[in-house]
Image (cartoon, rainbow, N blue to C red):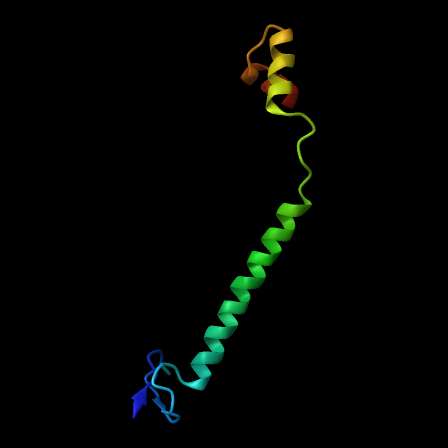
Length: 80
């Protein structure tokens, strides 16, 4: 008789030689996997909703040079 690798309870159905968890632990693992998947999906949707920058770095650099400033100085000035 096999024992569950998670909780140590005996596993009744031994027909599958790869079975490692009891039904309760299998449900717990599936639930945790579903929660991780939902977090990933939410993060992906949030990333898709972000608006792209209005100017490229090269455009900002050209504007800074036109004003005689460095890129960092120009960006710091624009954030004020």
